[in-house]
Length: 408
Image (cartoon, rainbow, N blue to C red; front, side, top):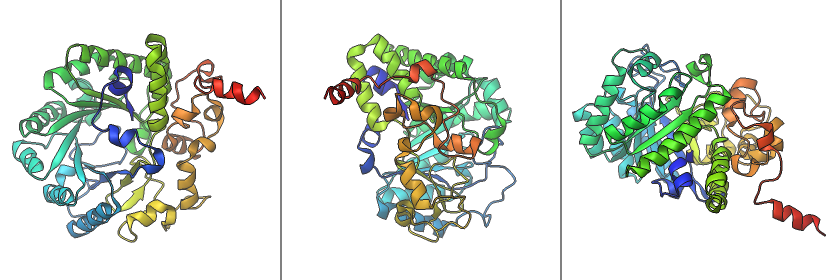
């Protein structure tokens, strides 16, 4: 995640304590796709969630198994547990599981399409200790409804947001950037003001699940989107609206933001570089982990083809240490070797990533995207939109070090 409001405006954000710590000291936030069932059929769903999966499917962990997983994660010391799906509200036991997780000391949050979130459910989540609800919204009504393949998805999502706010829950929007909704970014920010949204995350499309059939924005469109997001964030805060703004899953956003800060506020640029050195390059396999509806542990929620192990068979700590035993591991390296490389990925990336001057803050981009497109987790990130001219040369705060070393 790239904290636009944090880095561009030097504002504190709620997750600073997770994002700006030494990488070796982090324990992962857990994204738990607790069900593959969904009441929608979204074009870009990375999990391939669908209406056809039935309740109490043998593919889905039971209530008792889910409680055991929560005990395991709490014992490991995971800082945050994010319930996702499918649509997690289709699990009737969700409030009870959320309450149990909160009681075990886990910060408990929810990612939902919002269409099933009414006043009663929002109050139940609040009582259960859920601290944040992120609602997916992919543009204004026409675009969002087409993406969600439902004529009522937009209206119901806004109703869900209202119910969450009324219950006293912190709320956020989760927007997946597409060719269709980039022109609507300014209108989405107006919606943030109108709806009193606390947080907005713009996700770059990842070609996982059904998302593989959706054309991602072209590089010049992504640059336009970033410029609009950055400028809109400044305008938001100038109006006194203190919404946290982030971008997710394209680590070129860090260097791109830094270059803009360097042009506009050179005194802040070195601080931005320093923070990106701590937080940049993503956290797959390090600061974030995913667990799917069957208990499989993944480096992140998009990497469904990289099952590291299963928490119904082994403790999470063993799997996270690289001692998982998945039967379908694609290799050629072992799980432990793969995780070690992923946590030091800048030493293994190839192509443009390997010769980029921003390698210390981007660390080679989003590895799942390269793996999904090329079948090679170390290939250059196909979504990097920086030009060859922009990535050439020494990182600015390493030039003086290089000069000293070579001066003899």
